[in-house]
Image (cartoon, rainbow, N blue to C red; front, side, top):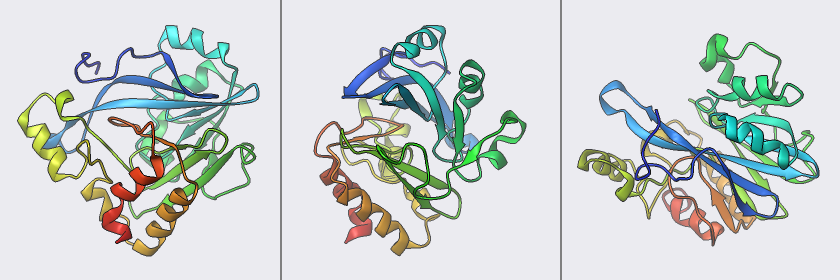
Amino acid sequence: MHGGAQATYPPLDTLKPVADDVWIVDGPLIRFGPPLLRMPFPTRMTVIRLGGDLFIHSPTPLADSLKAEVPGLGAPRWIVGPNRIHYWWIPDWHAAFPAARVYLAPRIREQAGGRIDFDCRTLDRADGYPWDHSIATLPVEGSYMTEVAFFHRSSRTLVLTDLIENFEPAKLSSWWMRLLTRLGGVRDPDGQMPRDMRMTFRDRAALKRAVETMIGWNPERVILAHGRWYQHDGANELRRAFRWLLK
């Protein structure tokens, strides 16, 4: 579902530089949630270049213009599904760039069914990946899903997916959506982990250790999949967003 400029982050389907060797691509709106509470979510992917290789995180739709643009940065080498609900466009990227290896967070295959019917590897540990020298990997395990966070060391960029969501009220089309995001704890300028998601991370000590690890990386910026991301002062944004856990 494609949304207008007010609801998304145009220009869409094009590479936007964030830091040295880091780009984002803002994609269309999708609707997600229970039938009576479906919300429009703006989407965002991240591209990190390691030498001549590209790390593709949470792919958005592969528009023809984007497909032509990507090889100008390098060769897609790794395509990453960072949690069980961020996989939909991976088959399109895999078909377009068959030399790239696909890595999936736990339970994506279960969620995707037959949509992903090709060879993939699992993101189920903190190291042992071909990008270890440049990108730290941190699986954050919950009862519903494991989200895998990534930290690009040289640019001090932390890449999250749904661990923080940050919807801007001006981009929401109704008072009902603005209310839902406030009640859910995901409204800018105080975006956090959605309150319903918090209940699925029952091992609070493990979650706290993961957040403290991310803070310890001292990120300058934190890229989110949904809503306004944090261009500066990333470590303090983490402290703010997870104050309910760290206190």
